[in-house]
Structure formats: C-alpha cells, structure tokens
Image (cartoon, rainbow, N blue to C red; front, top):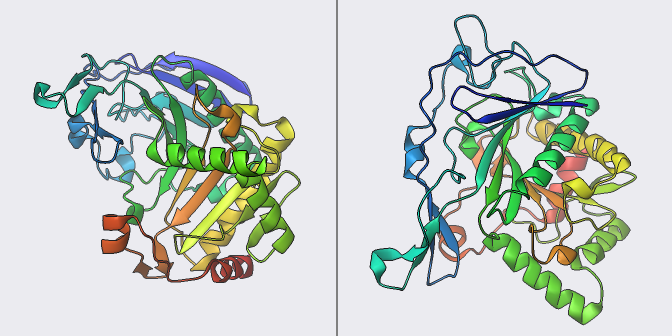
Length: 359
C-alpha cells in the first residue's frame, strides 16, 4: 500500500491509501475560507460525563444531489473534497469537525459558578472514503479493499493517538438515512476525543473488576463461551469470531472479536487484518440479505484509550441496526432514551438464527 499526504485549499490534510502506486498531485482549486470550529466540552455534574457543543456544525453539507457529492472524485467544473479524478481509500480532515486542534480557549466553568467545568473541544475529526464508487457499499468491496481500509484505520489510529489532547480514537461507519446519514457515498469517520468516552469508561470498570475477581479478561471469557456454545455465532474465521452478544440490545446486533487480546487496530497482525476482511464481509452480506434490502447500521470500533487502562482493552467491532423488520424501525423511546434500559423485540438466539439463515 502506498500512503500519500497532501493538503486541501483551506490547509486541511488529505491522505491517499493506494493499493498500487499512483501520483497524487492534483490541486484543490476551490476558494475555501479557513475552517472555523468553535467546539466546547462541558462536564455534566449529574452524570459525570462530558458533552460536546459544536454549534458551527449546523451549516454542514446536507443530502446533496449525487452529481454534487463532496466525497466523489473531482470532475472538470465540479471540484470536491477529493481533488483527484479517482482513488482507492482516502482520509481527510472534516471541514465541520465536532473536535478540532484549532479550537482556542482555556478550561473554565459555566457562568464562572464553579459547578460545570468547561474546556475547548480540542481533538480531531476525519472522514474516511472506502471507495470512489458513489453507489457502492462496504459490503460490496473486495476483501483486498477492506484490507486497505483496515490499514488506513490502523494508520489513523496510530497518528491520532499522537495528537495533543486526544484520549481515545473512534473509527466508525454510519450507513443509511434511517441512521441519520446525510451523505450517501460509502464513507465512515474517525473521532479523536479529548476524553475517554462514557461507554468505554464503563466497560473498562467492568473489565477491571472481572479481572481482579477471576484473573482473566471478561471479553476473553465471553468469546470462549460463545465459541463453545455456537448458538449465537454468525461467522467464525481463523482469527475472528462474529456473534450476537448474549444480552443483545438491538434488533440486529453483532460483535466481531479477535481471538487474541489486542488494545487497538495498529496491534493487529497482517493475518488478523486479512481474516477480519473475510469475516466482516460475510457478516455484512448476511445483514443485507436479512430483509432483502440494504441494512441501515452503525459499525463502531471499540479500542483501548490512548494513555490509560490499555492492558484492560480488547479491540472489537460492534455492528447494530435499528431496523426490526423490513419496514419497521426500533425507536429508542421512554425506557431506552429516558433510563438507558433496552428492551429488545427478539432474543439473541433468534437474531443469530436469522442472520445465519440469510447467508
């Protein structure tokens, strides 16, 4: 793979990941003003969780027509975020970031009352385009392209981990309008958070308590139990197993877990990256066959934090969908949204059986 770094008209970094060497010398001809991010984070005194405020994102691009897609390669008279006329995988800084290195300010408190801490939302947000084909999908990629995407994720995780103030790196993909996607081109994002996220902190606390009590990683024991039972396993490879979690929250819910404990994507071996590509594509194609339509989903990488508790982390990918039938959505209503208590309309065993049958 060849990695080429260039810059867009407003100074943002763009990185090409090519499977074969290509010259990447096209210039961004747009007249762009500098990125103006004004992110702030506030610590909720009732939950102890950070909340990001990014009001500047209200003006971000929203559902453009296909011929004006900002993620497609540039064409004569139609420049886009990618100056080249084609690409394999490309990553660039988000023009409307939730977190940015350019944010100014100092830690303070709301209204100077000392109750609600605030700080600049310093971090980094990137966009990852998986293919130049506007009408493609991750499930339609060849395994070789998925491997390139994995290498790009690993590269960006390593680089963002070096960025001042970044405490956790989160690659993810949102797919489908039902999920809230505003750009239909196949793409994902990477957030470099200036704090350890609440979900990760809770998972680390659980992992620590389990390790102290049993002397083993909790996800390792869950993985071993799922492989032994097999009732919720969807796909099993040499280095990865995909299964429906035994307490699944979503109508479609799958974990992809490597058989070896590693903290993050850069720690994966070459063989593990290749095997992930095979296992993940088999899962995604079952997902799209489940209701005989493209499945809207979120695919979220759970990685160890950059600086703390890395020995407790066990990298895994969580994929879930709000689609509970071909034309019915699972809404997060009172119990889920109000109390964070999930109620699933199907058992994990039923979900696993449906996905296996869809294969």
